[in-house]
Image 1 (cartoon, rainbow, N blue to C red):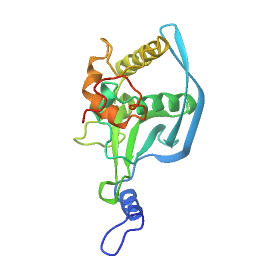
Image 2 (cartoon, rainbow, N blue to C red):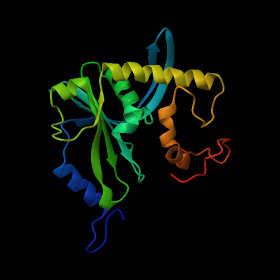
Image 3 (cartoon, rainbow, N blue to C red):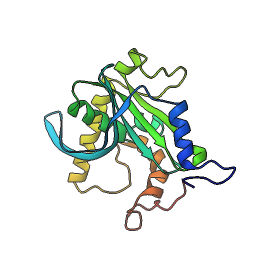
Image 4 (tube, rainbow, N blue to C red):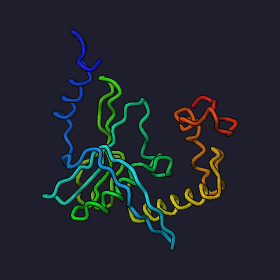
Length: 208
């Protein structure tokens, strides 16, 4: 319920409480930020990417930027999903923000779950090396995925590998030899896929 009922808090109130009790060190600077001409280059290859970022965060005073993505489902990708490229959304958005907002250094990515009042909350899912060194998010014992130089090099290589698979007509959910770590996330991925009714992957209807 958006507004709740007597004795039960609604989604809107839960979001207001979250914003008051768990603020981020970055403020929104753009909503539904679309990009269409982001050119990624790696190993002599290039591709142009497009997308829409729910919220671009930034602080000119502190010199950092970030991205926030709203999640309305029960599942939020974990740090391990990001580290093993099972979820590429936030790292890709951070690369784009670094390109389009060059005066600020990307700090990290945040998931904001707004499925229902009881599960409203922000999760700092990944941080860059610069943000870690500055203790920008003041994480304490929390350990989000660390996106350092080695990560981004491997991440770009992964994106271009996916590009080559697509260009070769490989759309199957069956993992390639170079992507064995993706298999553990297959059931969850398949359960949320809009195309599983016409997909040829034999285990697409198995439960996660």
